[in-house]
Length: 81
Image 1 (tube, one colour):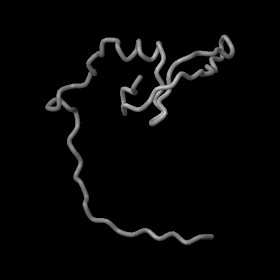
Image 2: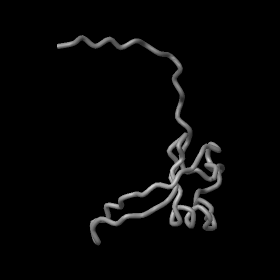
Image 3: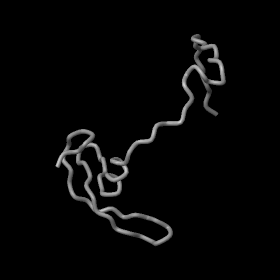
Image 4: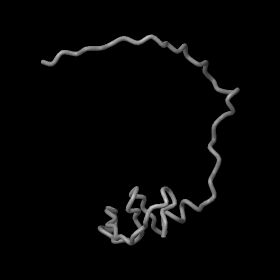
């Protein structure tokens, strides 16, 4: 199997879930040997769920004005104790 993020090699791995209500619970899934991406049935179910649009107002309806941007910089030198 290949990783969906980097196309690296996925290997079977076992994970310990530290859920405080039930105690420790073992889960199995896959981990990418290249980037460390974890894939298990619960994560896959959530990724495949229908994405909901973000509830943000359109840009022209923002209730604030953009602040002035200052481009000048200065060095800050702090002395050790």
